[in-house]
Image (cartoon, rainbow over all chains, first blue to last red):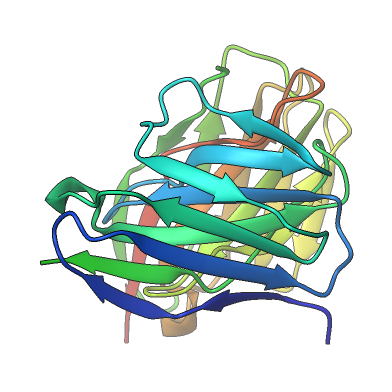
Length: 112
Length: 111
């Protein structure tokens, strides 16, 4: 089945220790998104790739970076995680910017 | 950013009851989507509405898009414990922008 896969499902890191979350998709969608979701809140868009074009949201901290080496994979790098970065990180894809988005199961990040 | 207001924020009902969740905005959306998210999982798309006044049904769930495409509602008939989750509406507005999410309605259905 075509799907969005996120690894790992749970990630524990230490304060200030870089961490990378990964997302892969078999949908062949050209747009990939990264969202941050804190408890009982809506997902907050961090950035997205439209093909190879990177689009950063204005309020996304510089601590968050992303890479998309090919159509199928996208990575979220947190350079120096703080306690406030503990959250669920969701990857999503869509065929175009304006179409339905399909979400992965998320990675729950804990910062100690 | 085009804001979407969802109400109520929290809803706790008993199995068998009916409920309606609202999603409102002052902005016009070209389409609007409803997602359900269970704890520890990603949102799952339930429906997309595109045409003003459109009504879509998904088993016991009825979705309506306002005539002016500024608001939407989700009605659940005879709620079941399996309906428990966070219901999110999300709108697509101006070309080139990603989804604008509402803050969600957290629904708890108890047996």
